[in-house]
Image 1 (cartoon, rainbow, N blue to C red):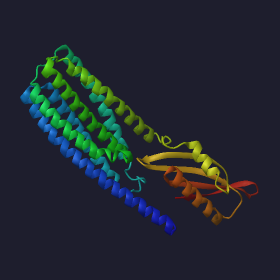
Image 2 (image 1 turned 30 degrees about the vertical axis):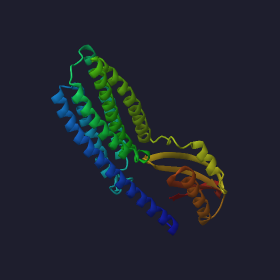
Image 3 (image 1 turned 120 degrees about the horizontal axis):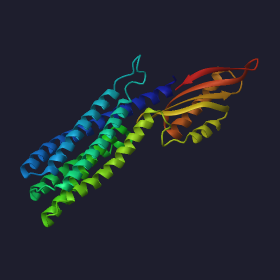
Image 4 (image 1 turned 180 degrees about the vertical axis):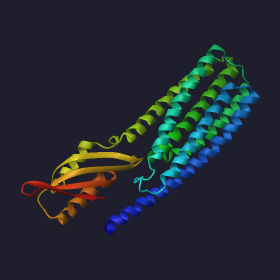
Length: 313
């Protein structure tokens, strides 16, 4: 690997480590805030005889477990590659995202069930204390959500954690609205109605999260990359006659990889260095693909047979 390649590799590792530290710090803040408000909500719900608050505290308990799972997965992604896991454990974050998304769907299903039960028998609660505790929960969830939101664009695992926090914040809003309406009207049926509305919002984000995680595990083409555009860009490089066996996939969040067979004219091996350099530059600048494995094939190498040699970046 030349000096330029080594410099890019060092810079990528530095950026990944810096992103890891920011993500870990954000998760620790979210865990601390979620755990604190969970204790307050459960105690306040028990004191106010509010099933809504205690249910929300139970919801936050599952979210706390999800945040701890996300942190654990993040720790594993920093382990170096081994002889049996050559990519390391980067995809642990994808598995964590899949588990979190599935958990959100199951939690929403349970809330739908609880909403039906409350529709049949609306509970009587102390609305004033319910409102105060719900406001504290909203502030804590809002702060935790803001901390995590800055990292969600680069990490699917943290996106799952963020959706859990968002679900908690929406739950707090629902509890506040229900408390206000109950306080002024005594209409207890509003509680299950708001719960259903919250669940619909949570389910949309959960299904999208599960879909993205499954696509990565199935090694589908990243949604922000058009395979036809990649093919056209590579064919436009001087010296490239054709290509086949083109594959693009995602190793983990923000880490795309590509492999392809490139057909070039009959030339010496060292002559492909410039072509490879242009290929890697094109992939990096236009498609943010930093890891590529290119197999060059040349025409008329020996009596009309095709020869090949591998190059990896």
